[in-house]
Image (cartoon, rainbow over all chains, first blue to last red; front, side, top):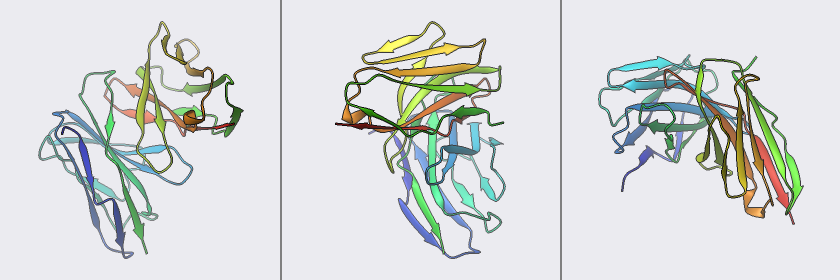
Amino acid sequence: DGGITQSPKYLFRKEGQNVTLSCEQNLNHDAMYWYRQDPGQGLRLIYYSQIVNDFQKGDIAEGYSVSREKKESFPLTVTSAQKNPTAFYLCASKSGQGDTEAFFGQGTRLTVV
Amino acid sequence: RKEVEQDPGPFNVPEGATVAFNCTYSNSASQSFFWYRQDCRKEPKLLMSVYSSGNEDGRFTAQLNRASQYISLLIRDSKLSDSATYLCVVNYNTDKLIFGTGTRLQVFP
């Protein structure tokens, strides 16, 4: 089935460790996005990529890094520099043509202890 | 000022009521607009796109006012199943997708 897959669904890490969240899509979409959502809050843009080997910072990129080596993959690394990493992370993709729908993965709940 | 602003609510309405949400955006370069729905602890899903001429999908009507830089969503004949958070989304011409903070709707019997 076509779609966007995030893994794992739940992730626990110790403070000070880097952790990488996976996002894969088989929709042949050009654009991919990472958002962070805190309880009772909206989605805040971390990074986005319009094309392979290119990506742009969003509003809260500090403490995060991404790569886009393949069209279908856009992993997010939460580094130890991120002060409050515990959150719900959502990945999305869309065909890079204006007003098309963005599809989301089911999200990864990261808890740092 | 946030790029996309919404009243967080919650809006508590009885079944059958009509409810309206507004959303304002600050960047006039915004190209396209959407309303997404998010259920508790789930991913957002597209409710409807918002077109300049306004558009309707069943009980839902979306409007765009570019001059005043706001979009609206009207829900008629509210159902219990409409209870969710409604997110306003703005797409800039660089394909940067910005979400509002969301408006929570609770429909009660």
